[in-house]
Amino acid sequence: MNTLFLVTGMPAVGKSTFAVKLAKNKAACLLDIDTASEPIIQAAMAKLGRSKDDRDSKLFKETFRKPIYTTLFALADANLPQLDVVISGPFTKELTNKNWPSEIEQTLKSRCLVKCIYLHCDQDTRKRRIERRANPRDAAKLESWSQHLSYYESETRPAYPHLAVNTASADALEIALSSDLLKDARPT
Image 1 (tube, rainbow, N blue to C red):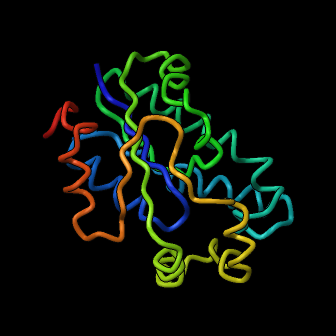
Image 2: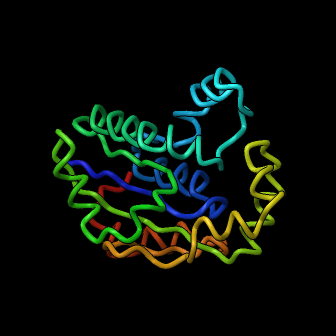
């Protein structure tokens, strides 16, 4: 049985970077939310007369959040019969659902294990990372940082079983790979 790894956390905690390393280590298919959806979202937002870089408005979240996640899980489902899959995305609304991993297992056609990795770091580190990556889609976050933080309310740990990794640590991947949560997944 293959494994679906869900790499979750707030913006700029290092989800994409961590997911790339995890996918390489596990020889897994990588599905990054930005890579999988960016061109489609940019085209749709432009057609709607909005900034192609808008990822923070109510319109974006209400229109695109669910279809993006549905697409990621459909792509995962198509790949899971052949190999492990790593999905990287915020999944912030799912934090309070203690049954989320088992609900995913029941929803997917492919039988798999679901393992969740929750990445976190302090707000100052996240802000520095956002500033450093200089991605246009982050402009609204930086322009109203306190509003951005309030959208995510508190950065509490997920209610579901997970491995929490502080990505401010340089050896975050090594710590995660040595954890019991990831040990039984096939290494490369």
